[in-house]
Amino acid sequence: MAQLYSVTQYPIEVLLSSVKAGDIAIPEIQRPFVWKATKVRNLLDSLYQGYPVGYLITWRNPTVKLKSGELSAGKRILIDGQQRVTALMASLLGRKVLTKDYKTVRIRIAFHPGEERFEVRNPAIARDGAWIDDVAAMFGAEYDLLELIERYAERNPNANRKNIGKVLQKVERIINNPVGMIELEESLDIETVTEIFIRVNSAGVELSQADFAMSKIAVNEEFGGNVLRKAIDYFCHLAVAPEYFSSIEENDPAFARSEFLPKMRWIKDINDDLYDPTYTDMLRVAFTSEFGRGKLQDLVALLSGRDFETRDYKEEIAEESFARLKEGTLAFISKTHFQRFVMILKSAGFVISSLMHSRNAINFAYIIYLRGRKENFPADDIARLVRRWYVMSILTGRYGGSPETTFDSDIRQINEQGLQTYTEAVIENELPPATFWTGILQQEMNTASARSPYFIAYQAAQAKLGDRGLLSTDITVHDLLLHHGDKHHIFPRKYLQKSKGLTRAHYNQIANFAITQSEINIAIGDAPPEKYFGYLVNEQCNGGKGRYGGIDDEVALRANLAENCIPANVLDGASLNYENFLTERRQLMAFKIKAWFEGLS
Image 1 (tube, helix red, strand yellow):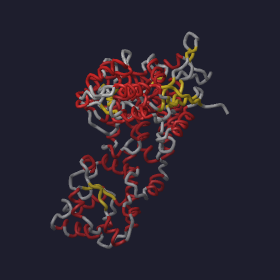
Image 2 (cartoon, helix red, strand yellow; image 1 turned 90 degrees about the vertical axis):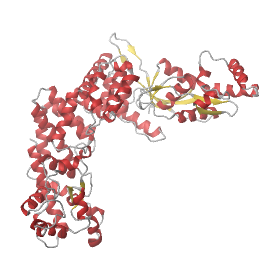
Image 3 (tube, helix red, strand yellow; image 1 turned 45 degrees about the vertical axis):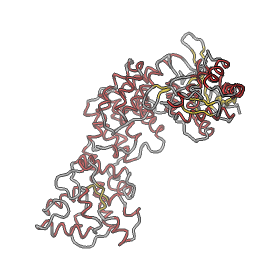
């Protein structure tokens, strides 16, 4: 079997020179620089002590055929060790780094020759003549050891010049320390590179195909990949923390002048967290909607210029791929597209982020939206397709197992059959009216998972249908979800534990939950259902004190129970059978979800 890699020891000086010359490209997939300054200090101390600092892993871009017919060898991409190399560039060469607040700063590491100790520079160290306050000065072009010793001796007349000279020479030799580099063959496919990374990396960090795609994007300056990478990263950051817009605008003026920042300016005034995409989400949506493919390894290949027919690499394919990915990214961050898509999800009842069950289901729903827009579907038709597809996806767990494979299959079938034809056929097949609502769904609802997609769908259904909270006269489930209403055990947890000896898997069945006001939940406490329902029908609805909410009419009470899918027999006064109650309620909840889904058309 051919060797998949080579291992070479490089002096740090050679490594940093290769980075400066651009032979080794740092793709910055871990933007911004995440190390604390103390960790940079510890790295220099390890090098000073002669300790090993781990291997770096590089992967050479495939050789690309230029438009002229000539071949251009690809750069080596640093896929593991970015933080260490960035730390060395910052501390030894004085390069600035971008912080998590998107501020460009210098990390200055000081050195105390007498104590042979590194420390992060601070005002006290800067004032103390016993310190060399920035070791980067020792690796600059104008550095002179004898001059440094002379200046240091002037500040510290009691220092031993000979010892100081030896110590500073030891600091100088840091750049001669060897670092092991694992260089992966350019012919390796992305799955193999990923597997090698995971096995070699001592921390067991998983490097995803999205990471490789971001690497490809970030190191490409010829076709604007470096700016595109920032657009993806910045938008994702702003979706979570819109207040950082001004910081990006101030600290990255080059990006502020690009076409991207003005197009994402709108997000600085948005605090909605229903859909906060990661760069993986953005890549999946932009790539799949624009290229009609679902596997990010194909994006990596296309950005490299891969011709899938001839199996070689061409510059024009890389150029076209970057242009198309840019268009997909601009479509993703469009205010009109993004806000309209989120509004469609909310219009289906998914009014808070905790109801958003599957990120990949959301992503593909956005792909459907963007494809519908691109194909000039009427707005109402797009909204209908998005709502129904998303609900089908979460009810069936469509993107739970191998999402990339399913993405690829779905988008290819959409390309062949057409958007509406394919989506409607899949929905009909996955949610057959004769068996899904009356059989499959009710069986699947026998679960105690609070994050169950079926309970999430039920809550969205109640929000969409305008149902009132359990025993509420006016306050709706929609409002309770937005304002943190309680998830009430209809058969109280402690009651089931003490009287029935039931465990969590039994008392936390989703059919035992209802959304209600906190004060109603507190008033019920641990009372058995026959007691509080009995009081409601016999006392509260007959002029008695309003102990459990404000409903004082039996007709209104029965209507409220129906809205919350609670069997009417809870008002009969007899002791209730818990298992029978769960069975009946699952059926009623399933029928509500069915009515809700059918109303989304």
